[in-house]
Length: 566
Image 1 (cartoon, one colour):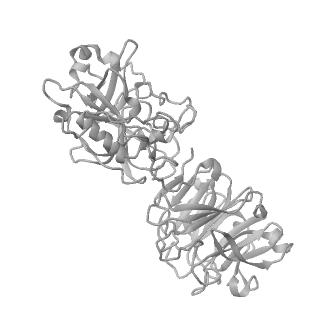
Image 2 (cartoon, helix red, strand yellow):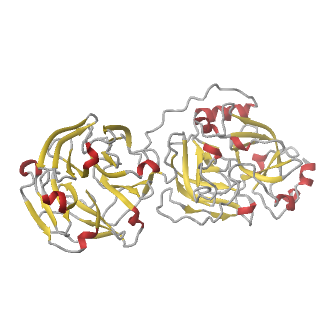
Image 3 (tube, one colour):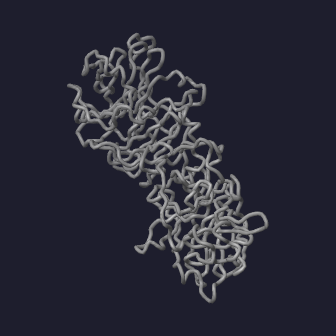
């Protein structure tokens, strides 16, 4: 102990090197643009640190550096440390609330050598599901009869409640990208699932190499020294995305394993100073994942409805139908419950790639029967318009032709269409169409009238030629549906309670030149609760997918990232 303290001078502490893969600030990196308040690409902040959180150092013939972050956790022996599995190393020691200006002998809360490591025998530092086990404990030697918990306090450990949490993440970045060599935190950030893994992720710029093992606090005590931990920096590829070092996501996206049975088995082993192999890791059944941004770049259009047995007022979220650029059509079944990070439970292929649906130009959900099952209205590139009475996991049913092939107006002049309830007391089977010359018309009650009953609600103009995306929902509580328009300049507006008589006054929910210029595909629906279709799903131009929950006349509120940009 005393030899180590003499060796660790402040100059040697400052010569930090990091053996992990999260090693360096990417060349040319700049702070990412903030897009939302939920897993949003914001930046963290430097602060003075917490007594129960500190750095891990190791010494050998080649280096002396703080290479990971760790935290003191409650234990019977008052001597236990939590960090990442990939942070296990020889000749390690812990410095709580590390102060780089002081040599080891003058550190405010001492230097505590690691006496014994405890790590799951099945942990793998790679891309496999065994990276779910990237956590470890260490028992620390005492200091003249004192144990570390008695000096700095200890944090409580809790099972991770799920993939969606609000956390404060703390770590000590390496000195080459942290010249001040101070503690760093991302306060109050929202977590989402890492698809295909029992791990969660945050988006917060500044979590560079050295933060591995850092605690994810679900709450912090009034003292500011301890709290409740539900995760630690680690997991897939040692806690960060598998991207090139010059990618802006390299040290912005950070992962953590979820704490379940295996974690607490290891916690018990560490407290009892035993090493058990708990057998092959059996990953838990994961919630359905929408996949990756590279796939979603190919989504052409999408629409929401109750297709697979759900209904308004029930427990199921709305389903989503997606048309892809290769002619495939996919139905995503709405999930039960109120987890906005997982609004869908399963996926069904309604049409294969290179199917006739490659000729579909636009589609929108309708309710033509007045029952609980929804259908579709589709415009094809040859000018035909068809209606399907219902759609389910097995396909499209009850096809009815509304306009024959080679109908000039529908082939050459129709630009955008969306169905909704625009007649008070009617079904959701009215059709609004924006034409090439900017005029807007409404076809009422397709079930009874087909396309025979048309009324112009906006005359020929230049403004509506810039409408980019249409969707309908229940954002303002009116008797009829609201129309959501995303314009080509990035503005987004609501037209509340649209009827066939005239266009109501607009409500701007996003200004011109906003990030909504990149909103490539938009759909509204009841994706978090089936009481109102006031959630907005957006597929952005880079392929990532966001869900805005509870939009209303005041605008957009919480954003949940369903498909990350990486």
